Image (cartoon, rainbow, N blue to C red; front, side, top):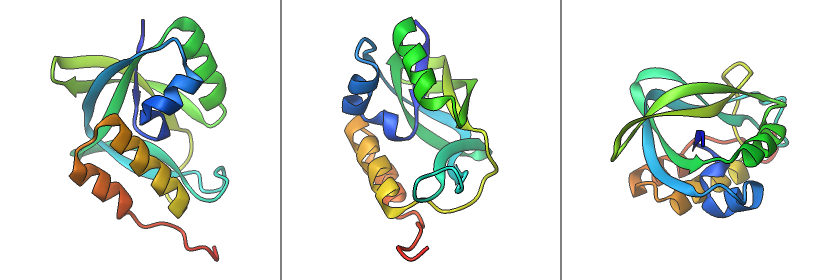
Length: 147
C-alpha cells in the first residue's frame, strides 16, 4: 500500500476515517527541509489553503496512512482539483520513509481564515503533534473577518 503523509486537515484520524475508511493510521513523522505555508487565496472558501514548500531550515509534522487503492482514488478525487502529488521522504521513529503528499498548485501567499487555522490545529492535536507545534499553528496570522 502507498504511504500517504497528511500535513493539513487530513492529519485528523476521524476525518481520514470518513474520507478513506479502509486506510489505517500508520503513525507520524516529520517532513524535514520543508515548511507549512499557505497559497491559493483565490481558491479557498475563505482564505488561503495549506501547502508545503521546500525550506532547508524548517520541518512539518505529518500523519501517515496506509492507503488502499480504492481510498487513494477517492482522496485523489477530493484533492486533485487544486493539488498535485509529490513523493518525498519523511523521518519517523522507524527511520526514513518514502511517502507521497499533495502540494497546492498555486503561488505562495495570502492568509488563511481563523476557522481554517482552527481546523488545522485541531487536526494536528488529534494526530498527536507536539504541543509547541500545535501552538505555532494556533498563533499563525490569519485573515480578519472583514477581508
